Image (cartoon, rainbow, N blue to C red; front, side, top):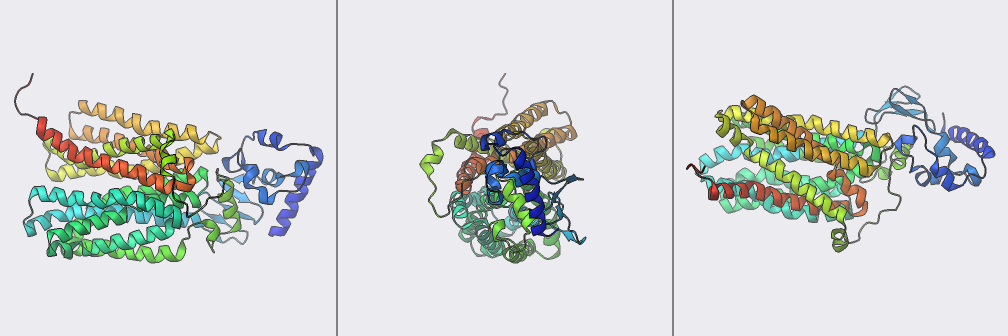
Amino acid sequence: MAPAAGNAAVTSKALAFGARSSRLSDAHLNSIRFRKPLFGFRYNIERKWGNLSLQGGGGRNMEAIVERGRKRGGLVKCTAEGIERGILTGGRGQDGTFVMPERLKVVALMACVMCLCNADRVVMSVAIVPLAAKHGWSSSFLGIVQSSFLWGYIFSSVIGGALVDKYGGKRVLAWGVAFWSLATLLTPWAANHSTIALLAMRAFFGLAEGVALPSMTILLSRWFPCNERATAVGLSMGGFHLGNVVGLVLTPIVMSSIGLSGPFILFSSLGLLWLTTWTLRVTNDPQESPSITQSELRLIQAGKSDSVPLKKGEFPPLRLLLSKMPTWAIIFANVTNNWGYFVLLSWMPVYFKTVFNVNLKQAAWFSAVPWGTMAFSGYVAGAASDYLIKQGYSLTFVRKVMQSIGFIGPGFALLCLNYAKTPVIASVFITVALSLSSFSQAGFLLNMQDIAPQYAGFLHGISNSAGTLAAIVSTIGTAIFWNLFATGERVF
């Protein structure tokens, strides 16, 4: 159906409805509760479809109501253009050709770069063993090299978040990938040159990677309606968690085939390849995309809960942000999440080695399984969150439910870990703990955009820096506390 014909049909239906209830006020209109609201949002119809409204009385915004679209097999039919569009799977137009949503391309590229982001970190964790043997580094220096990544990362999150708010996620993420790919490529050279050069390169690498998560948050919030945003974040963070597996599997293979510098060249090349596709295919906002269809654009705009236009270029009001308790709720949630995450990340192999006396190779396998499950469980959490929103539950309720699961569930699982008698049972409890912790992605990680859409990048940077500090304390602090107070003598 042509757009003009579709609009004419909608207009005639709306006027017929308006003739029966021409005195219906906006207050009454907004109070109507539909069993299956448009795209899952009862409260957002009037203000998001104002540009399509009919003038006068009860006909105002009737197009939003009468064009609810017929549901067939989970697809939303956009009658204005005759295109059926799946939420994340695409659909077919009237001519029978397959139509892939632009937002699906965006989230696919985002998942790929998040995978590279984490894989680039893992490369050094694996390669540092032969590097230490080659250069004669001590164990204490290895810890310094590993922590040097955080020196830059802890500061760039705030700066990167502010830059994302001002210039958009596309440009900032592109520069971040370019710089961290360059740092990855030059790491073997820096290691051969001097220890100072190596530490500086690792800090620069962390500085560049600090913009990744704030950029992801902002871009996905622009490209996805609220009732799809958690799924999009789950897919992107799934790529991040798979980066652990990719890095751990490919790095030893490439090193044995090409040499010590092989994995650094490989992952930096993949980053530059991704960068080429990203700059040509993605825009900061769907309204700027030359490839997006009007039906998909309307779907995205109708699913946005914020009606106030965003202003770029304003300096983030730090004092105002920190004066609100929801901000501190996000910060404390990030700190708690990172504390547990990095404790398990750093000490899990040691736990299996010391408690169950398994060798390091077996410990690596027991440790890898839980991280692999997080990629899937994060998607499940996102899909469940979006489902609840589509059913009409408030964002506040959904975010709190997801975050409660993300904290209480792992807590119970880790308490049960005390009763594990075999490494297999211990791995099961840790897998459950990490899988449930991924529900936090649909909690505090999305809540930043809910409470401060104009400054979400900056807020993400603040909370991420606090979380990074917690990561440092939880790993280094745990080791210091152990060395100070642990004893092999009988106490009781």
